[in-house]
Length: 223
Image (cartoon, rainbow, N blue to C red):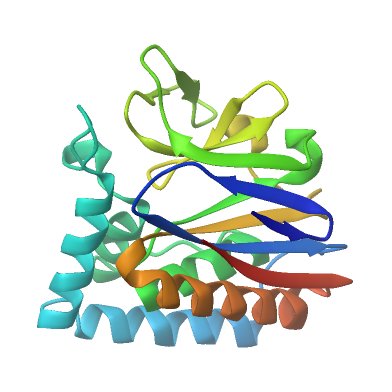
């Protein structure tokens, strides 16, 4: 169990490791020029290395992490990190806002999917990482599209055990926006990449302090 500022995340998913970032008092406006340039450098490097053996191995490891029960990480069910890399390769990488841009920067650097949760919108300080159950789903965008969560790795808020994020797409109900001040970040990884998830969480916390003016940003890991 990891307790950070004062958010608690419990891991109930064998074979999974997560990096945890908790930041308070953030500003979430347009990214600075320095942050945008850093993101461009990261996407250029990731695109240049996308055919490398290391990139292929990381992609395979993340997909294997998501193969659980009936869930298959293919088509629209691919991890968010793959979507980001493809967007970068096509020259369509978006600048959204400082928190999401930091999320995307670290994701393309590590090729790990990362979720962001607005803690105020979630209305929770306790969370659990688990696999989805039959019949669970949530809306993931403003158009009202629904993601089925059966057997999918997810983050749920407690009490209520309500899913709010996955390595595929996060819930629209708890996504960050320009009003976000307190945020929870989850770096998703197989246990074999626990050290990468830990370092990614630390990298995120540092970037949030530097570019979002966070009053506090801490990083931890599970297990």
